Image (tube, rainbow, N blue to C red; front, side, top):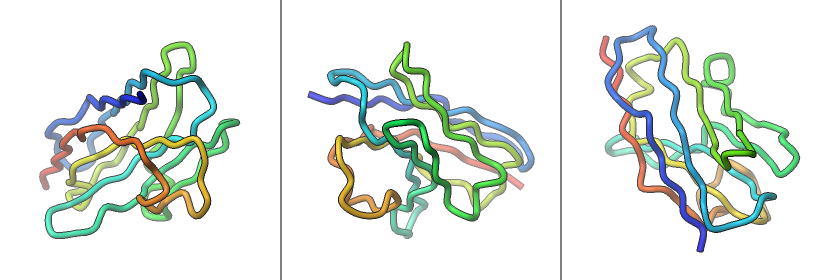
Length: 123
């Protein structure tokens, strides 16, 4: 059973930084992993992903500010978020799956999800 647990969320002022972590357990390496976020009243959106060999993808609106990485020894996925803006306020989720049949930023592609961690950016 795959389990994902996010941590690292919190409140920060605009321009600040946060680093989210997603600890994975219950599976071997070789999964696609991604970060999604969902703001109140909005759909869940993919913001960054890492494929099985470490190639990364980003949504245009975060690619110059956020960095996705993974520590294979710890089986932990990270999201370094810099230059945060109030519009980055959302619940952030980690997702994983062995295979993707479509685009990395579609939530239906992933079967495994964490419980989320809240990020709040004040102006």
